[in-house]
Length: 127
Image 1 (tube, rainbow, N blue to C red):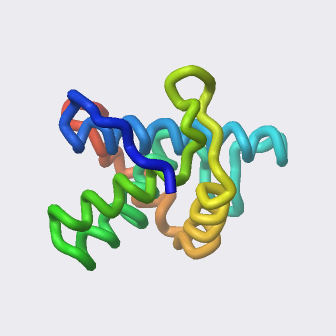
Image 2 (cartoon, rainbow, N blue to C red):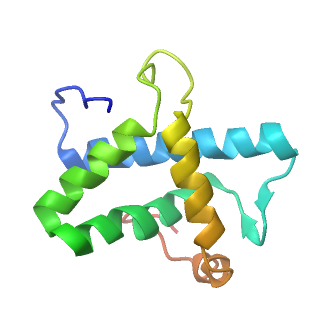
């Protein structure tokens, strides 16, 4: 498992950065493999992928293990999903990252895109 680097940033910010990097890497991987920004019924925008990660990975761990331990487990998983060269090269998913994302999208309900179309956002102040 990749170990998160000691950070001067709060854990919430580090998690958000990893979430964005994973979303970008997954979108690029799908574009390279399929030439499409669709994955089944799902639109692959970085923002929608981030929302899926937050709701279907991070929230599951927080609900299962509690806020502190769940958030730590989520950050550890997200860290393990990316190659450690994140700060020096474009983000690339590890084999585990590819497996986690493929499984998440395999089980993601089609209604998720309808939910995202409501304008809900992960970040305060965005529309």
